[in-house]
Length: 567
Ligand code: PEP
Ligand code: MG
Image (cartoon, rainbow, N blue to C red; front, side):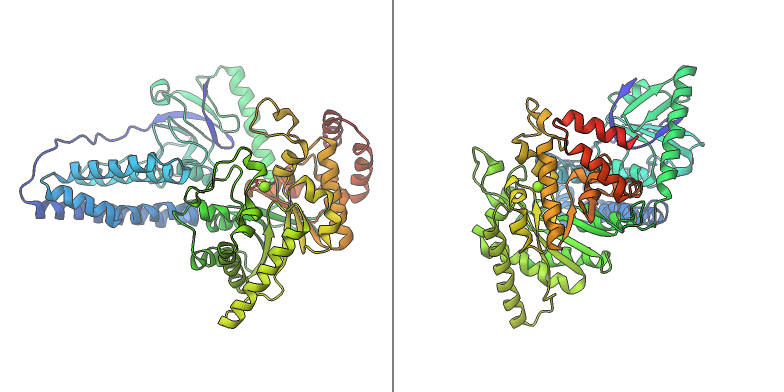
C-alpha cells in the first residue's frame, strides 16, 4: 500500500495508465536574428493562449466556472509583462527562445517558491505548467492528452497540472494518483470539482505503478493499493458502494430547505475566505454566508488593500449571494494569522496579545477603510458586520461608534449604504461567553467561533501535541459556554449562529437545536451532511438528550452519549 494526501474523496478501482510527460529537451544555442526569434516566441505564445482559452471554455462546461478561471489565469500569467519582457531581453542577449523561456520562467518560479505562502506556491506551479505548454509549442511536441482514456482508468502522473486536467473526460477516469501536490493545489481543487477520487504526493508513484495494473485509489484515507487480492478488492468494492450510497442519500438534501424533523426552519450557511469561494458555496447549496474571513484579502495582498479593492471583494460576495445574508468578519489579524507587511511585533503570547479587534481599534484609520468598504458594499446585498475576539462590551461599543462615524462620512460624500446594517459579535472567547447576556443587549447577532472558544475555554493550544487532548468541545466547560451564548442570544431575540468547525459536527447538532441555534455555518462540502443531521431531530428528542448530556461530567461520557444517540 502507498500513502499520500487524500485530496478528493471517494474510492476508485480501475486500471493504471501512467501519463508520460513529453520530452521537452532542446539544444540551447545562440541566435543572431533576435527579431525573428522574438517573433517565433510570440507565435508560440499566441498558439498557447489560444489553446488554453479553448480548454478554459471546455472546462466551464465539463468542470465549472471557477475551475475554468484557473486556465484563464494561466493566459494572464503567460502574458504578464514582467515575464514577457524578461524573455524578450534574454533573446536580445542572444539566447534562443526555448532557453530564454526556461531561464526567465524558472527565475519567477523560484521567486514564488521562496515565499512562505500557499498562494505563491500555487503561482509557482502555474508558472511551471505554462512553461511546459509554451515549450511544447516552440518544439512542436504534444503535451499529455488525457481526453481519450479507456473507461475505468486510474491516471498516474508526476504532477497533474491544470492544463492536463482540462482535457480529462471524467466518465472514463476512476482515480488520480500523483507524486506531488497537496490538498490546496489546483489539481486537488479540480479533482474535487470533477468528483474523481485522488491521492496526491505518493512518492515514486510513476515508478511503482505500471500500465495495466489494477489499482485502488482510496481518496478518503489517502491510500493507493496495487494488484489487490480478491478479498481486498471485494472489501473496497463494498466501501465504494457504501460511499456512493451515502452520496446519493446526501444528494436527496440538495435544493431542499433546512428543517428539523418537526419542521423548524434553520439556516445553512457557508464559511468562505475569498469572493471566488462564494460561488463554490452557492454551488454546494448554501443559503447564506455565515463567515467571510476577510483577513485572507489582506494575506493575499502585498500591502493593505484599499477601500476600493475591499469594496469590490465584499460587493462581489453580496451579489453572488443575491440578497441572502452575508456575515463579513472584520480583520482578524494576529495569533496564527500573520500578515507580513503589517509588521506586527513578535509577542510572547500572540493568542492573548495584540490581535483582531484590539489591533483594529488601536488603528482606527485603517479600520475605517474596511468599515467604509463594508458599508458601501451593503448597498448591494444583505451584508452584516462581525467583530472578532470581543471580550467586553466596550469593544463592541467602540466599533459601533466607528461604524456611525463612517456612515456620517459616506452620507456627506453621497454614497448609498444600508442605514440599518447589523453589527454582531464573533463569540469566541471565554469572556464573551460569560457575559453573553450583557453582549446580547447591544449586538445584532452572535456567531459562535468554536475553534477559538474551545482553545480559550480549555486553555489548550490545539497545535501543541502535549495538551491537544484538552482541545475538545465535548468537555462540559465548552458545552456550557456554548449553551450560555445561545440561550442568552435567543432570550434577547437576536440571531445566534455558529461558524466554528463544531457547527459541522453531527454529534453536536441535537444540543445546538435544543438550545435554539438558528444558523449553522460550515465549509461547502459539509452543507448537505449538516442539513441531513438537522433533519433527523425533533425539538422534543433533542431536549431529552440535552437534559441527559448536560449532567455528564467528562468529555468521554459526553461523546459516548452523543454517539449512542446518533446511532
Ligand atoms: C473560530 O474561531 O471558530 C473561527 C471560526 O474563526 P477562525 O477559525 O478563523 O479563528
Ligand atoms: Mg477565531
